[in-house]
Amino acid sequence: MSELVSTGVEGLDSILTGGITERATVLVSGNPGTGKSIFGIQYLHHGAMEHDERGVYVSFEEDEGDIREAAESVGFDRFGDLVDDDEIVILDKREMLNEANFSTAVDRLLDTIEGESFDRLVLDSLSMFQLFFEDEHEERTYLLKFSDILKANGLTSILINEQGAVFPDTEVGLENFLTDGNIHFIQTPTDSGVNRYVWVAKMRKQDIDTDIFPLDIGQGGITVHERAAGFSMMSRTDEQSF
Ligand SMILES: Nc1ncnc2c1ncn2[C@@H]1O[C@H](COP(=O)(O)OP(=O)(O)O)[C@@H](O)[C@H]1O
Ligand SMILES: [Mg+2]
Image 1 (cartoon, rainbow, N blue to C red):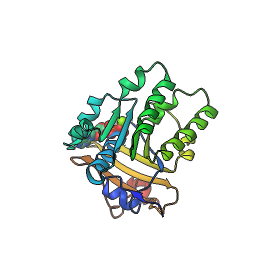
Image 2: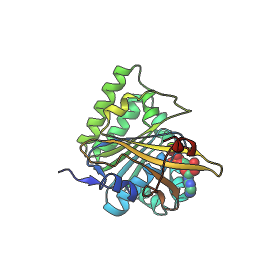
Image 3: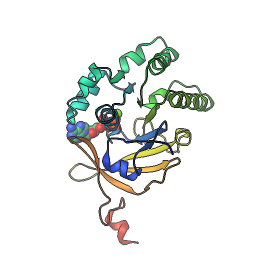
Image 4: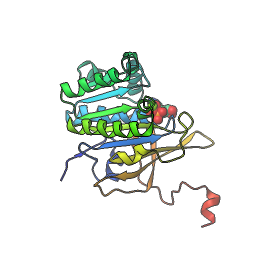
């Protein structure tokens, strides 16, 4: 049996009955503000702190400073030291987008992961990465090749998928089929703020709980709670009609 890689979010690891299969590529989808980047940071922070596993954070969206600040804001005080010590390597927006073209930016990423041993990778986001492809065929071929390269280098990877207002897409994108697992982060507005949820829709070769679970973001990062009694995504009115 393959080893399981714990995500650093206890409740999520329970849903996954231990974690993500080693060398899997998992798509984490959600609207802006659902906690995808925090999850990516937590995943790498946990790997480095608890398992002595090195991580790479590739960001097309933020600068290294923003990522360090986000980590500090949820209380990951050692995150900056881990980056300073190269336990977590950040390839940020400035580096990835300043390369002459996309293929040199990808070469840089490949040089990083092929040259040294890393265990965990976060790509923030796949949606930005995909903007560089001409058509679906090219995108599909590339995504499969990319995911093979990640596996061949021993990486267990989180590919972040921006959904909703910024990248409208009502269909199930092909990235959902091409990855080993799909985790969705969901938020719904309430009078006092937002309710957050997580749903593991797919995890190849794993027996998972496909219910939707409540999630919080705060000190310590993301916490996933046990399913509350009578908990439902539906509104009260909908519930009564059942
Ligand atoms: N320290 C914190 N305490 C509580 N909530 C936080 C904290 N830091 C971030 N958040 C929440 O997390 C959200 C952003 O998470 P982020 O991972 O950047 O989202 P995404 O990457 O999905 O757009 C913010 O909108 C905020 O509500
Ligand atoms: Mg983000």
